[in-house]
Image (cartoon, rainbow, N blue to C red; front, side, top):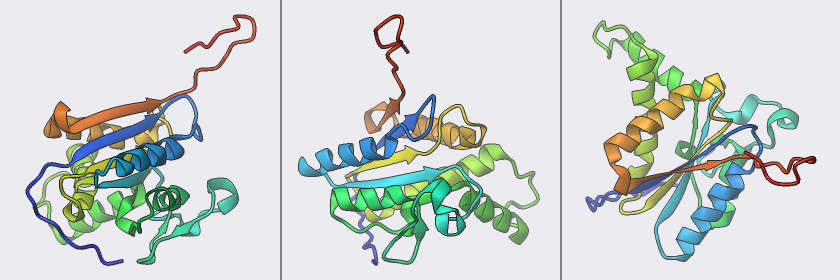
Length: 199
């Protein structure tokens, strides 16, 4: 799929979906469902999946541990949530819609080796977080005046998620409250002795 660049000058809106307590809580289905509802409302909508693992893509990962690899039309070996997004939205996504820690670090290290940082000390903040923000915003080059849902895989408390959480925190400040929204998915178990949901 070759994306067509649009440039209407309109501001995209971002919805960041995070999860807490445990992984596998349903962030992907919630993200897909929200995207479908917005799409049915007539709003241009797309999704991005962040995977905070050091693998560059899901192609070499054990499917029994991580889930089935979804191959995009442009050959990207991505997280299976990309397949859910495609089915819910009935549109093809590309490999740019799946961002991993491995991709981010690889890009930053390659840039450092080429001398792009002009001798400065390369750090998590601001270099890694800036790279994450650039990757998220790159998706918007192909969709203006729409909504971008960004699902952050794993849980907020995971150490490997911290650069991504910081990057989306910074994005919220840069975009403004009118252009961004956070949705946090968490477990609210019913405790046996109490008989009611507890957080």
